[in-house]
Image 1 (cartoon, one colour):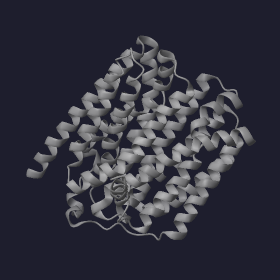
Image 2 (spheres, rainbow, N blue to C red; image 1 turned 45 degrees about the vertical axis):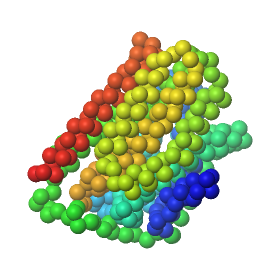
Image 3 (tube, one colour; image 1 turned 120 degrees about the vertical axis):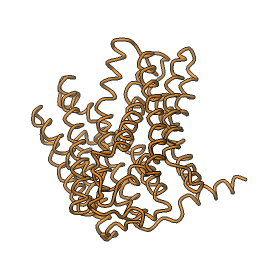
Image 4 (cartoon, rainbow, N blue to C red; image 1 turned 90 degrees about the vertical axis):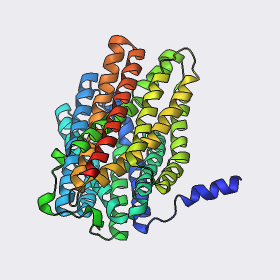
Length: 405
């Protein structure tokens, strides 16, 4: 029985081209090396002695740089190709990491972090477009899921390694390791993967005269709102929830860490088999995203039950299931929605929705908590999750009408 379950699990990782595995490996190396991010605010406060207000402004510059980088990466991927953008972005980010550790002034770091993130986040939409080029059409969603798995594993291992580096050689060591990991990962990519033009399926070929601007694609803009909301809800996991664990239930950092580990383990165990099963079944992507949005909203309604610590485990399981259903199929929906030659623009706007959510999520969450308390924040997050679910239902009906036209 256990052997059969393991065999079925492994089968979900079969059928990928060599290039997809290389993309997953370099993504893991890069994300494991991105250990500056979890410690950035701590570095700015404790090592450079900036005020909370200054740290906040540097993080805002960081977020807006991420948004602009995502847009530029998508736009340039359509113009000159994803391959060149990926190599330029990661290699230049590696060099920039070596340099930015020597900037210690407030204004200098605002400008430096903004420029660094413009270059670094050009990589994300280009990488999504590359998956469209290298993955087989029938397993594109699984390929996106494999790369997401590499991201999650990288983020899971990176902070622990980062903590050891800080203890051993200080914060400067993080910048060196992050920079080296960027250069190593993109060097592997450049050596082992050759540039390939995206093969366009028959149903995606359109005359340039009939090509629709992304800014006129109403369905996609409603979908971007859904992506923004689900990301905003999800980022509460790393901002307000850890504080709530301690302030309401007295959980230690270790116990909060165990809850975070539960999320990582559930994603690792469930995401690929679930995506593989739903992909084979041919379930419509938007229908799966509906259930993902609803489950995420449900997890925050559950947090309103604040008299039992066990509810934190149930809520974490719910948000993890919501993540499994919503995020991989959102990636795939955005890529499948893009007309020929506009994949970069569509994926840029998609990644920008996550960057914007990252900027706004903590600000809104902490503002609500400071004025009205945790319960109101959970109710607000759950409510916008329900609004996102209804938006998904509208998209589902709009897609049916679009097919009839």
